[in-house]
Length: 365
Image 1: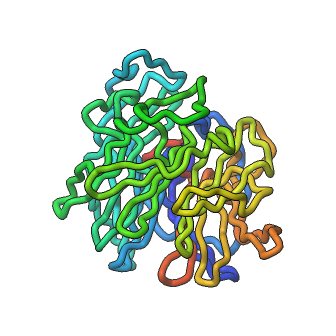
Image 2: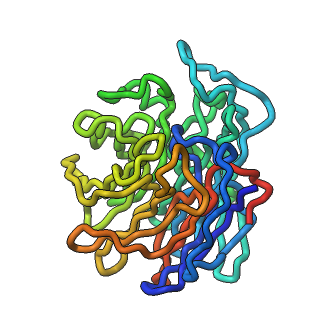
């Protein structure tokens, strides 16, 4: 069984790593249930912050000081081969349902569901796609969801950006299930192409929302009026690198990529992308990048989901590193298992999603 938890890091630099359930943002990640391993122990600067989440993914602190965690849900019971025309997938059948949500965690640990009833789908291997990230604009919570659309058996609830209402319902703001197939990337993956993409991470900037699509290797801008614009087709210049992580610093975007399976240590990179879509390598020599965050000194922290030179991700092989000025990597925390998603809190600690893919959702802690 794999645990899902929020944890905090306490060693210098003082970092609270909250391990929330990670949203299944990358369709190429094998189920952790397939990988049997005894996890390496967590480094002593890591402690549990919150438990009992259902496959948490991306997480951010809101303007109210509370932590908001995207939870993918666990799909449903009915099988679906997808309803898209001319579509086949190695991940079918899916088991779709409207079980994805967002949970708010207060400073005292109290958990409140603040957005519910969004699409979720469990694939043939037990991995789940659902809510993957959160962001705020003018105190309003927006949710990125990757569990919708015809390819996952949720044709009436698209993959896209949702706005959370005060009654914990959620409504579509940006329909990515319509945009993605009508705007194909230059180098799509033929063997596991998903019409609905894999919207994996999101940030808010200047009144708009920005999204990375891991399955198509693209970067989109979503306006609150529902219009969507492609900022950059990453696949056109970098190939299909599976972009999975996103953060913002001083008006520029930073995108990290997953790499390939079997895991090939050191091939992942972080790219700096301007609002105009210009791209350059910012850091390299990384492995399975699934989270990025800058501290208030401008230092970049990178979440590596598994650094083991193995066929699949390995429990206990995840870590957080800091990119030094000369490009070398300083190890900050180790012993993480299947982590995905990372953010700084107002207290200066890092909060990280751990045990975010694979495993039994009822075992979350």
